[in-house]
Image (cartoon, rainbow over all chains, first blue to last red; front, side):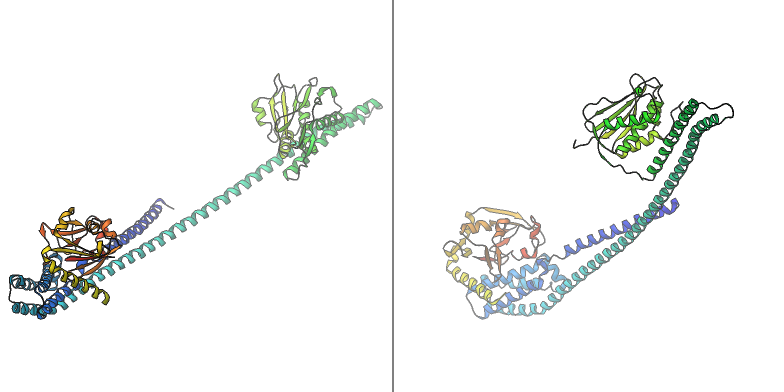
Length: 443
Length: 160
C-alpha cells in the first residue's frame, strides 16, 4: 500500500471517529435542552389563575346578592382585587397581552377600586360593576384557555423536534460506529493474515535451514567416518600384507604382533561404528534413559576396567577414585558408562603416555560429580568454548583418531539424565572434565 | 380536590371568619389548629413582632423582579405554637388549600412574609401572610411542586 493510500485510510478513520463523537455530543446537548424545557413553571398555569379571578368575581357577586355581612363582602372584595392585581403583574400580564385580553383588565380593576365598600361605595353600583365583570371574564376565559393550549402545544412540538433530532444524531453516531467497527475488523483480519503468512514463511525458512544443516552434518560425518575408517583399515592391510609377503617363513611372534595391531585397529573401527550408531539413534530421539540409583564409584571403576582390558593399556596410568562413602546418583548406567568412557579416552589420548590421569568422585548439595583430570597441554578458554560443537576437533589433534563427536555425545547424554558435562583448565596444567549427575534423593 | 376537602376548607374558613369578627380588635393574622398547644393558637401582629424577623430577596413565579421579603420563619411559628406533626394544611382567604410537609420548614428557611419590598402585605395583594421559599438558594425549589406551596393570603394552618 502506498503512503498516499495509507494517509487516506487514516483520514477516513479519524473523520469517522470525529463524526461519531460529534453526533453523540450533539445528541447529549439536545437531551440537556429537552430536560431543561420539560420543567413545568407555575406561571404556565394561566387557566387556573384566570379561572380563580372568574370565581372570585362570582363569589363577590353572590355575596352582594345575599346581602351578607359587611366584613364578608369586604373580604371577597379584597380577594377579587388581589386576583385582578395578580393578573396585572409581569408574567401574567405578558401572557394576557399575547392572548389579546389584557388592555381592558386594568380598567376593570380601577373601576372596582373606585367602588370600595370600605369607602362606603354604592352597593348597587358595585353589584352592577361586578356582574359586568363576570360577563367580561367569561368572554375572555376561552381566549386564555386556547392561548395556553397553543403555548403548550408549541412547547410539545419543540420537545418533539428536539427529541427527533437527538434520535437522528444517535442513529447517525451508531452508523458511524458501525463503519468504524467494519474498518477495524477488516484491518485486524488483514493484520492476522499477514502475521500468519509471516509465521509460515519463517517456519519454512527454519525447516530449510535445519534440512541444510542436517545434510551438511551428514556430509561431514560421512567424510569423517571415511577418513577415520581409512587409518585402521590401512593398518590391517599393512599387517596382512606383511604376513602374506612372499619370502621367508613367518615367525609366530610376528603373527602375534600383527594380530594385536589388527585387533586394536578393529576395536577402533567397532568403537567408531558404535559412536556413529549412537549419534544416529540420538538424532531420531530413539534413546530413552532408564534412570536408577547407582553408585558412581562402581560405574567409574567398571569403565576403567573395560578400557584397560579392551585397549591393553598400562593400568597404572589411571588413578581410580578412592573408595569413600557411596556416591549414589540417579542415572542410566549404560549411558553414564558411555560418557565416562568417552571422557577417559579423551584424557588418555590427549596427554603424554607417561602422565597420570586422576579420577575422583565427590558430591554437592544437588549433584554427584565425577572429575577426570589429565596432565596434557590443556585447552584455551576459546577452545573449551568450541569443544562441544559437533565435529569439532581440538587444534593440533586433527591427526589423532576421533570422530569429533565424543564430547557432543557425552554432554547430550548427561543432559538427557538431568546432568551436564563441562571442561575447565586444571590448576598446574592439563584439563579437568567433570560429569554432573543429579543425586538420588531418597539415598 | 374532592368534596371532603372542599367541606373541610369551607368549614375552616367559616370558623376563621366567624371567630375573627369578634376578635377583629386584636387583629388575628394567623390561626393554627390541630396538633398545637390546646388545639388552637391565634397569632396577632404583636406575637409576630415578638419573634425573630428575617429577610431575603428571591425570584417568584408570579413577579418579574426579585422582591425583598421580610417576616418570621415558618419553623419559628410552629415552635411558638408547640406544633407536633408531619405536615400542615395551609388555607388562604381565597379558599386555596395545600398540604405542606413540615420537613420543608426545617430543610429550607421558609418565610411567613408580612412585607414585600418594605410594603406591608394586605388581603388586596397577597397578605396578610405569604409563604415564601428561598427559591434562588436551592435549585430544587424552582419546581411546580414547590411553587404550589407558596400560599399567599395565608390565614390558617392545620397541623397534622
